[in-house]
Length: 208
Image (tube, rainbow, N blue to C red; front, side, top):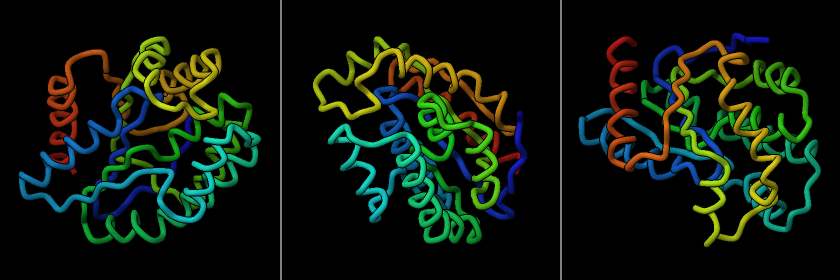
């Protein structure tokens, strides 16, 4: 069930992924800073976005009240706006675009909630450029739960069995997407993880 999707012609698209608590946001920011310091044209973004659909997603997740199909619908609408307004223009301009979560999260989270992964892939094939590199930060669900214990958890973060399914899909993402997918042990020190990510990204840049 590996799907081919459109690739960007000019820029480089990098998705940082993993279950909540894995360090995605920290690593996305560190990568952005490191590439910026090296003089690259780089854009950092995240999903859900701050747009109308992104705000609605976060609000519904906080209230723990959203059906998987409705969540999927909102994520797709948010992503279409994100790609049209930010991702595609940046890629067309030759930028390196780093996204803290992308449709890979939808495959994992909505797939684990029962939405057909084949449908997710087919729908996104119509409009979403496939990343040149997907970095999946992997931690056990129990560790994620500890890291999130001081934060208010949303609907997706409260069910350990569900998160185990999410993690399993992430670990098997190579079965669904034909692109560079790197799984990184995210239990290590932040700087060590950052260096490994940066090495992978610089290799992609050199080969692009």
